[in-house]
Length: 79
Image (cartoon, rainbow, N blue to C red; front, side, top):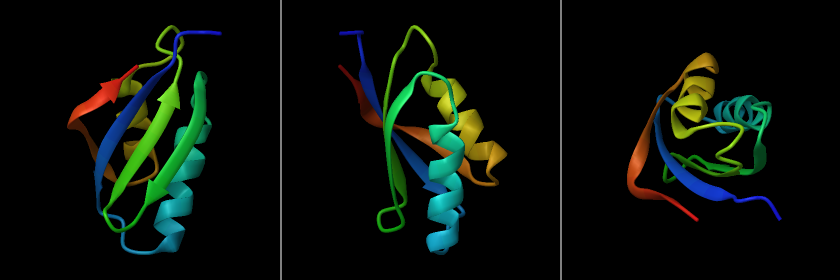
């Protein structure tokens, strides 16, 4: 099994379920992402990914591409 990590991103700018779905779709399209869960309250994404294929910075960029801001939660990147 490949080494996987889980990152938690705090997302700002989401206001509805469409925002949640757009963010989830954008994150899921990143190569190396195995699982994505996005919630509106609290506004965050929990992403399981392969660190050999992507990074937390790339995940945050995918959120920005969907039109929202994202920062890594403190202690939110773990194996």
